[in-house]
Image (cartoon, rainbow, N blue to C red; front, side, top):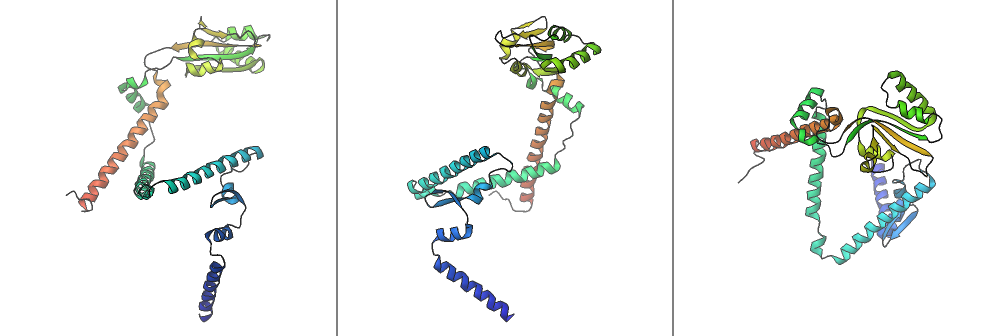
Length: 290
């Protein structure tokens, strides 16, 4: 026991001597880090070990350098602004205690609410529930742009299978569908069959490298075909079905409907949580209105 007490006293003495030899904060900071300084702004230093935390493993040397420079600039900007604010703002303006306390309360509340919701939210949404919501909230699902069911092909103009593939794209016979899919894998630059699912016209327009209004102006006999004369390929879509306005079909909206339902469930959980906490605090005499 006496030996341990002597060792504790000796350690305390060594620490005091160390602080006496290195009285400046910068010297102590350097001693603690014992690390390479990669940037400096006034009295502030950025160490290599701190910088490395923000560089993901496995990135290339070039990307690593870019990320490092971005972080260094961001760090330096933050330090410069902070120092400038402290030197230029009145003392009263530098007191951010109230704001920090408010932010802390908001952050803690948000984290607790997230935990509460994650532990209790029923994420199962049946098709009947979705259809009921869809029927009751038709105004939420009005189309902003046309939607289509299509087959799309991008193929070289010189391809020996070009005319056959474009013609057979309109067929719904299973044999033709299989044949087009098989041949397109070999001869087409790109091909996809989206004839069973709705897609936004603006998404299809990206494949034609144009806007959807211009794209639809080329719609004729259920085909959209855009031939840029200076290009070696031609892009064509067979439009199996199109809906230009009105309420979007139920199957097109299902993901959005599910999001709406889950969002409403979250809101109800949080409203009930707040009411329960207030009522409980009031019942226990913790919350009192005078």
